[in-house]
Length: 353
Length: 237
Image (cartoon, rainbow over all chains, first blue to last red; front, side, top):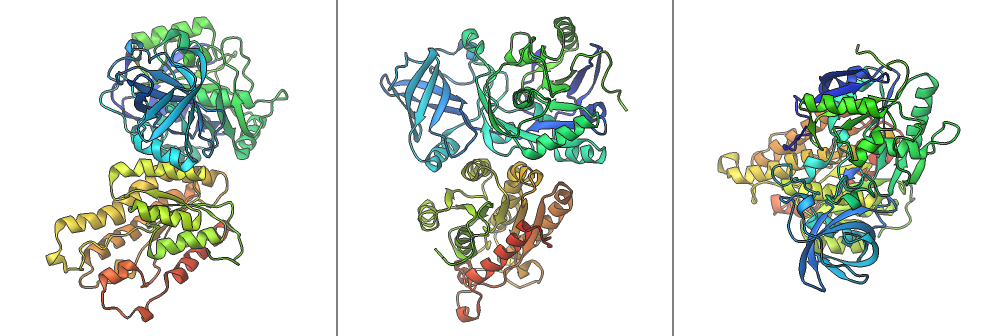
């Protein structure tokens, strides 16, 4: 597999590998995604807009150049933005792979970080030399002015040229709370939303603060995903409940949607509306309550996104999927190809129409 | 601030471009007086700060005619309001000042009018369409207002760049509406009439100001149409 290096959200040649609940696989063009959904199903997407979460600056005590990547918050409230979890890199930028980026100076509580117009203070060390909690000074409007003026989207060494916000906002991007794009949503455009309606497939959203997907540091990556706040609108819970009552399926567009829905799931099979903090990690032992199938980017074993897929399919199926993706030359990462994985069951959910 | 008016729009999240003078300033004040949460955009940072202090609205310094400004402005609008229900494209450029016949209009002045009056609103709507779609899915107002002009309909000598760009804006509004109405997002164009504003003074320096509409009156009418949409009454173009 090779990384997609052009920041195109909907390249016409994008491909989709569908893994049905019996483990059978077939390849299709991603444009044909809608044919794998049935009238009466519901597609759930994450409408978070992506922050320009990368802030370059200086570690004031040593004068060293640093890059701060905002990585987490405890709430979606855009008026409570003083406290952030962040990953700090030493000098350099996205042209160096994160694996090869130097660490920041040894960070201590109370250290000040000058980030363009913003000033942040380290107030918590999170058990890893790169991971801290920060207090950013100022009113919410001051902080957003600083982030909008100085921040850049988190960049990828495998993507050519610097990414702008318009490269990483999905067509449905609304509240700016994601740290990296909820990239499964790149498949969406307004034409597709119209086609879903025409076909009798419901479309609903939730908002989930998608965290950073990789830091290049195995110890730190092992802690991902961090806790992520989300909000499930009342209407989304109603539409999902009605869909399931009528035998329709719930298709999650992305791992973040899966994480939010399963965290909001209740013991009785219902779904809790409102804001929550997704703390549980979804992996092989996780019993899915809500989501019948997930549409995701192409991820490789070991990534936190891949771990989540193990809740849908057995290790053997996923291994064969990876082999098929490898053999087929599927493209990985944010702007790459996609997979659709149905939850394991005796029969396939859908046949292409 | 105006007081004594019913605060009936307290849940409404509104963004207004060109919010520091003329109609835009009146809209910001009038919407705040009705309790709406308001973010506004204008180019002059000092005036933005002053209007923000006067009205309690969120001020955003930015130039919507510049492509690179759009996403930072959209980010700050949705961050300030936690989403968006109503977007009012009020910022305008006359093109050449003083006004000039088309034959004497520099291409750059025409381009500036198009950038401010057509492309800027197009780009900002596009960047905020996700937030407006979320508003629609939640059963909220999801409305875009394009402030247009009778110069978009009638051919006035000397108003070429402005009139042609406003005609494009009004037509774009109708096409947007055709495309987004099925998804619950309404787009309308509203002509507020000739008002006593700094822009009118720049266009017609010798005008009899007593014959012109007060911006506050025009703003009240637009706010009424927004309120009608909030109440669930259909707004028509």
